Image (cartoon, rainbow, N blue to C red):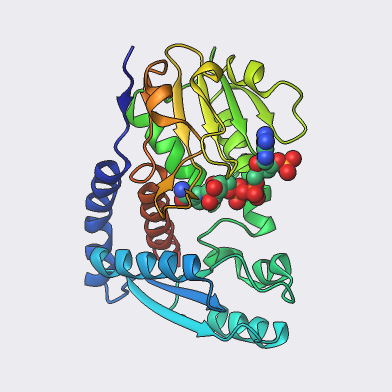
Length: 282
Ligand code: NDP
């Protein structure tokens, strides 16, 4: 079997086109959606992510503000800036680019963002809403993965086994909950899982969110599975690769996402979608 590629770039373009009408309607009412992006320090990868998010906003007709601070910014100052953005009616979404410098308590900063502006969906109020099945902002990466599964016809996952490798608060755990919401039987694997290969081989839907280049080989994939590769890893030669051995896995899976050009563009499209939703809900 040769897997079909799930093209995140073109699906993200489709999502952005769908958003354009909603953005135009908001603009016509004199309320352009606006996202504030906060970056502390000079981590090169974070700078690229922030640049991409800001340019995606511009292309979608969403206003953006870039708040950039030196790495030695005091936590109290950052919290004061977040509170000011919470009070600013012209800002609908607030995103703090992670990771933050070690002296700043990231969760405390996330909890300072108003849940109504928490377009990353990391605030405990939004995480709790996902847990109990209430409306709220869903984290962008898992949301993008779910859109990719819908795109290939996997909307209701009843009778299917989904395995998520990775249990971070921003990807693995919310991903597992969203799959559960769609009626999948869900397993979460992590560094303490005794036989990762055996666990992964049971997956009709396999989501890899580990951050280890090509940790998922062809022998870990069930024939005909849908494989969603969240991982972004930089190799010594500067190129990017995912957590899945794409070439080898393509011989076994039915569907697979590439890296780059898979989950990454969908994450940004979902950030735009959450920002528009935040503006509509004002
Ligand atoms: P974290 O480092 O927070 O979590 C990694 C998870 O992988 C942990 O739960 C860890 O287990 C697990 N893990 C580590 N080693 C193994 C192993 N050998 N076997 C099984 N599980 C293992 O990462 P994130 O969730 O933040 O990100 C994961 C990847 O996704 C990264 O490459 C990141 O760059 C990428 N990413 C991509 C995004 C996109 O838009 N495409 C967005 C966000 C992240 P344990 O908990 O036991 O330590």
